Image 1 (cartoon, rainbow, N blue to C red):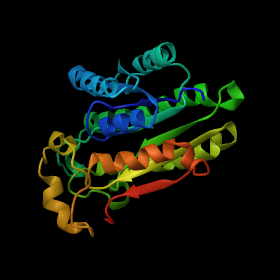
Image 2 (image 1 turned 90 degrees about the vertical axis):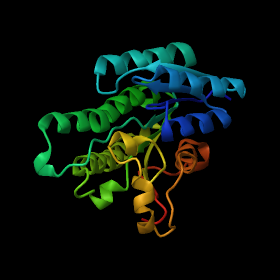
Image 3 (image 1 turned 45 degrees about the vertical axis):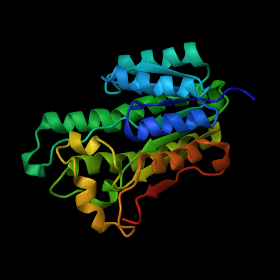
Image 4 (image 1 turned 60 degrees about the vertical axis):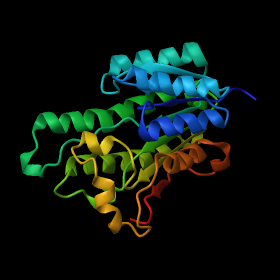
Length: 249
């Protein structure tokens, strides 16, 4: 069989790193994207290689189109034809009400979480589409339970960006379904990763766990299981799905 190649954006930490490791364990060659923390990305790559897998680290800020184009060209050159994309790169910001949010904050939120994902998906489609000579593939977008809950008083802008990802997933899935490409999304709930600390709420999962029917936060590895399943041939008739991994919240 042809080598399966997946690019995981934001793959140096949290859900992205867990996804990269699991995909590699399932036989995928993995491109681990990072923006700033090269050491963390290199650690993920070294771990994959130590276990006999194939992986490279690729630098790019997904909010910068030129960097995204260079990243995809590097994956083409070093790993071969892309067959999977995990649009995981994303940011939150400090807790704020909408009337306190600056345009700069809003632009950063949408540039990275929405436009970056759309540009990466565009480049993946150009490589995967059977209409363009590709062999098909799978795209998994990272949404959030915040898209359903709205995140009032914390980060409505993040919730709105993830709502856009849900709509994008549905539209793109319909657009490229006949071109051999499946497009799905995963909506994590309260997950134990350091993204909460970057938003100024390092204890957020513990503080809100009582709101989850399962009475706990989830792990990055639990989300990765859903992502890698959607990437895989086991999900061959699944597209346009938005899968909640949220403990019932």
